[in-house]
Each structure stands twice: as structure tokens, then as C-alpha cells.
Image (cartoon, rainbow, N blue to C red; front, side, top):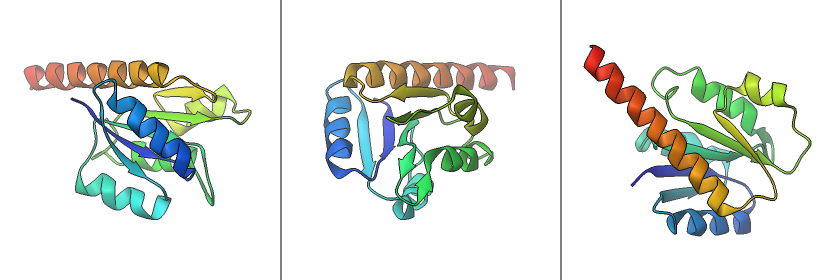
Length: 131
């Protein structure tokens, strides 16, 4: 069962998404602020990260860049989401593996996350065979 670390500063949406993804067999840890995010990431690296772009005083694209530039966590698939007018270029520059526009269906999120986790697991398996 893949573990997804979710960060969103909107408590109601965070709770709804967490419960919704659990219905699709995903285990979730919900983080309501950026101050708690990195300690949780380091304590138990997830199989995937789901992150809002607008996080109060932080931008999810910048956090995504930080994660993708850290070799310890770069392999973790990251899905960004937002209701804002987000350019494809900014998503590409962030290093995110996918972007989902609000409003979204929880099924769409679950399918995207499961697919990315399966791809990551396949890459890890192939990499271990080549070593």
C-alpha cells in the first residue's frame, strides 16, 4: 500500500483528500504547514508526495525543486495541484512528476499517484537488477 505525504494549508481540503485517497488503498500522512513538512519527509520518506502550490508563505513549486535536488529524495514522485492559472513551464521547472488542476476528483488523484508509485517501483527494481 503506497504511502503519500500530503501538504496543504487548507485544513478541510487536506482532510477530504486524505480520507478520499484512503478509499483507494493509499496510506496518507497529512501535513498542514511547511514547517512540519521536511521533518516528516526525513522521518519517514513516502512513496509519493501530493502538494498544493499555494501554501501560505511558501510555493509548492519551490519545495518541489528542493526535494528534486536532494539525491536522497529526488526519486519520490511529486504531484502538484492548484486552482490558480499555472503555466506548464513552471511545473516543468519545478521538477514535478504531474500537475492536477482544482477542482479535481479524488479518483483522478489516486490513479495518478498509484501510477507514479508503480513507475517508481519498476525503476527501482530495474536499477537493482543492473547493479
